[in-house]
Amino acid sequence: NLETLFVTIKCNNKSSTVGVVYRPPSGVLNEAINEYNNIAEQLPKDSHVMGDFNIDMHKDNSREVQQLEDSTLALGFYPIISIYTHEKPGCRKTCIDNIFTNDPENMNLSGTLKLCISHHQAIFQTTNSIIPNSNKVCKTIQYYDYCNSNIEEFKKELHNELLGNPPAN
Image (cartoon, rainbow, N blue to C red; front, side, top):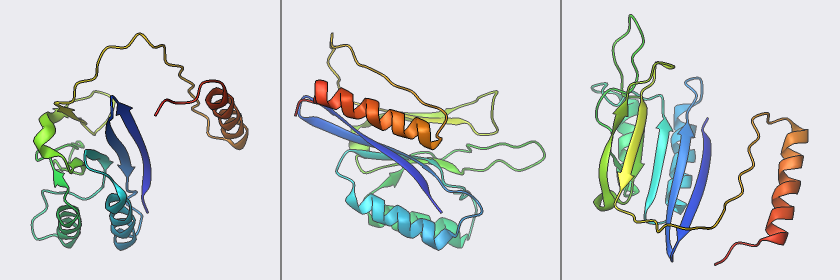
């Protein structure tokens, strides 16, 4: 009902949690909202949840919109995208992608970018957080094929990397 991925970025005793969400249109809405609530309840201050919720926030008198808005606001999150985010030829424009934050006072810019590769517009947000320059080289490992053998290889490489170079607290 809800696909998610979250990361917490820590820098100089400050952290920010960012999550991406996809709600398949075929999923059960009530279960997706419950899953969203369970996740959002656990998120710390300075969290940002973004993605394709497949609920048109511009739809008047919609039970779906009301459920998502009620649960989001009750958990201290605020939607920051208010314009259309999805435009399919022959269909009306919709706002099915959004960013919810529980730290709106730290936000300084949000919006959409029109893309030529999708019916969705890219959504973005910038914050007032200052990340100092660092000369530290970061190691990046990317896998795009999520078969079991690649997942196991990724876990092995991650384990070896953490043993040899544990993160600083």
